[in-house]
Length: 284
Image (cartoon, rainbow, N blue to C red; front, side):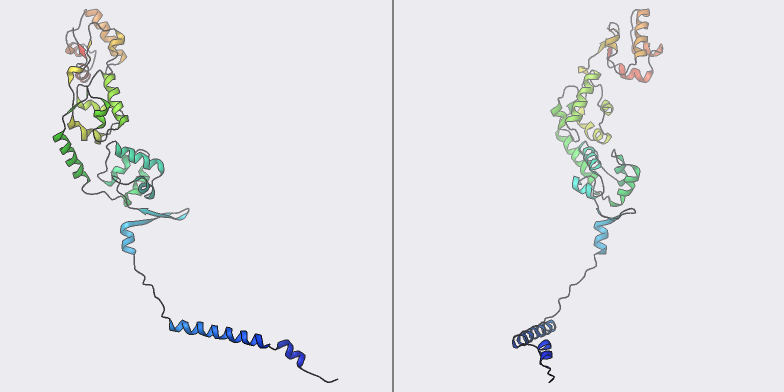
């Protein structure tokens, strides 16, 4: 039997079409490799942003979860809700801070962040490195107050309505309603300083608006101490139940009361309380 290698050629050989395809593929690969050396490499310059990063933001790390995200610098006097959230406050703390600010509260130094209800001392300490307070904030507030006082007639807190109170800086509908409600409870204000007793009125707000207010004592409702019964006399909020009862017993014994000093001398009321209730009683 004659041996032939043709079957082996057929197994490993190329047809004309296959040779042509291989040649085309080889040419394409050569062109691609050649083009790699012809086209210059585009280099991207890397800039060191360390200083810019440290001045504008910082990284907040959490031991349990590792990297949490960026914590941006913020001014609590001007920051928006989203900026407060990005600074690390939760939604409730952000809303409370904005409400505090709308009611006249302001931040003159970093420690003031601890005044906001719901922000613990530990939380305040973690926020302080990211607080940036404008140095002109206090000056701006003082100038605004001076301008307002120079052009605005004093508002009488014994006769004004809610609209007049809401025109004051830091006073919204809620605080205006509380000022009027407390006025009705008192029977009228004898001093602007009594506004400090209004629930929820920040000291900062009082300091800003006190110079724009006045209290006409002619509108105070006075109670006759010599004819009032227990219920009427109890309307004076500065008197305790025990003191009201003692005054009525003393009046029955003495028939009438002539001066506020008489109540103090007979130990019916303390002297500091006498300075308050004297504006709400008459001796007719």
